Image 1: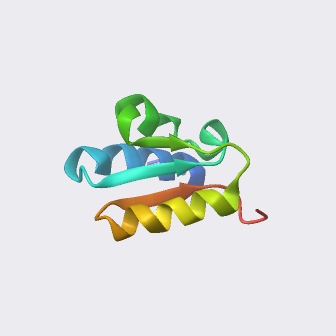
Image 2: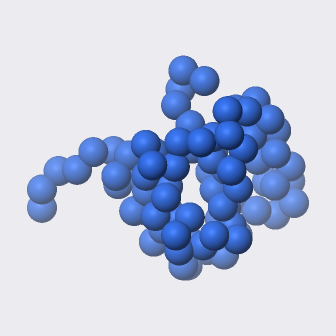
Image 3: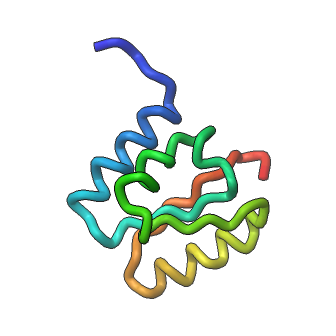
Amino acid sequence: MEPKPLREAFGEALAKLGAEYPEIVVVDCDLAGATKVDKFKAAYPTRFFQFGIQEANAVGVAAGLANSGFRPFVASFAAF
């Protein structure tokens, strides 16, 4: 097996896990192409939430989603 970039593996894993776990949602900060969560978005568009460049707001919403029974994954860069 050939190694792949971590973000590629992340996007593929989320898309695969999304089929098995309907409570998984993705909270994106306008980086779906860069973080490769666009694969999840294509497969489960109703479980993909786009917040643009509002990283702090996205994390707050993810906390609310988690408190409501979802399993959110926030896709952004560590610098933000």
